[in-house]
Image (cartoon, rainbow, N blue to C red; front, side, top):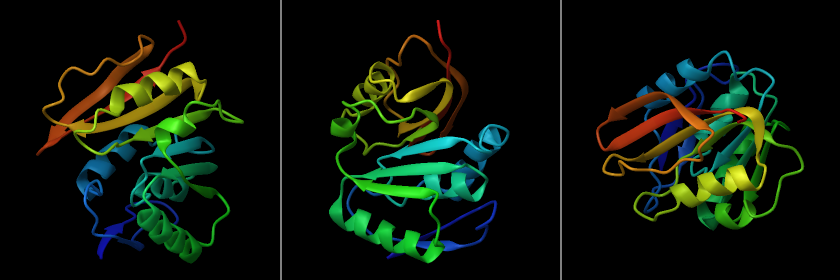
Length: 185
């Protein structure tokens, strides 16, 4: 069992348990700090979606920093069970965990769109483009949503929806990550 640390906000310094599972690779503190610096003025009172949640650290960090709500989507039964235990420790009603396949979930529009979406799919499974297209087509995003994407560095040609614009972009080790802003055309 590994640990991830919440790096800012209400739960700053709190450590969460993370299962040691194939394909589960929690984002490093350094990358998360960069991402939340990029988003700092956009998080308060926003609705967040953490697809392929794994450790759930993106959605939890967002709520810790003032987001009004985060929905965590995790397919793996054991990872979801561990995440559920971590959420019980935090005692918050601002985070909802759904154990399901993200691609199947995205086929149906949500009750309410999301302002910030974190997408960190398992590497080398060709899920990213499909996920991005479905977020756009099934109306999961608010009119000026921000979308954080984490992908393997060798994935250099991702076709994002035409109205998504990269506003920040970095690489670290084997990870390429970027922040996009959705703009209505």
